[in-house]
Amino acid sequence: MKEQLARNISLYRKERGLTQEELAHKLGVSFQAVSKWENAQSMPDILLLAPLSQALEVSIDKLLGYISQDRPITIYEEAYRTQNYYWGTEPNSACYQVLQLFPPTRRVKLLDVGCGEGKDAVFFARNGYDVMAFDVSSAGVEKTRRLAERAGVHVEAFKADIQDYRLDTQVDIIYSSGVLHYIKPELRRDIFENYKKFTQPGGLHVLNVFVQKPFIAPPPEKETNAHKWYSGELLGYYHDWLVRDSSEVVFDCSSSGIPHQHAMSKLVAQKVSG
Image (cartoon, rainbow, N blue to C red):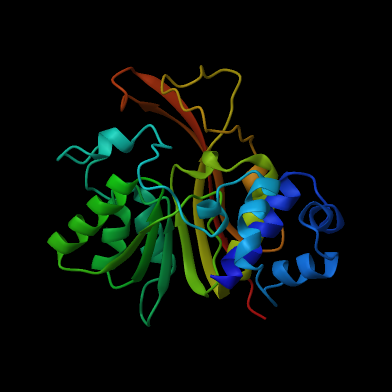
């Protein structure tokens, strides 16, 4: 918890445009105390949690890394509550690319960022990967666990918000499909630096993100918490990695019941050893 709290204090302080000195002044503590909190050298006194959360304009639960279990922050929460699997149970084609490029010939730890209802996470677990997977949807996480149980495999599925979650343990592969547009622009560099830092040398990131194109109409889904990405933006975070694949596709979609198109940037990048 100390490391999560340290990251969140730093993250939300910077989001509010506060220096360590300004935050310290609001709380009546020294800036050295704030520095120690953000470096996980100490933790704020419990009596400071309420004023700290007020100064940073977040709830205490969010500051500590928890999420309210009944707050619907994705349009898919209700869709995931049905018995049927909204996206089906067949894995994304990118899963086979992971299997080809980084087969689990040894113990391989994989993180599925934004796992939805778990179809890709369970595919990886069935093929021998050690899988962690998170999603902001409580219903999605529960269906991921049920799908894994039916398949006779284990997936460490948990609820987390992509905006807040940061790795603190090493993984070999980070996989994410269709959720990176939920990351606010001001958080992207911090999040990807965290993902890269906690990836083993030789490790792999297989990612995609929806991008804006002037010739494609906005999607019919009304996602108020989605944020725009542009061509080449995702690639820009991996200038120091070996890029195995970087491409864009335009595809038809009718998941909402209304035919429409999406443009998507795809990236496969590998951390250079040494």
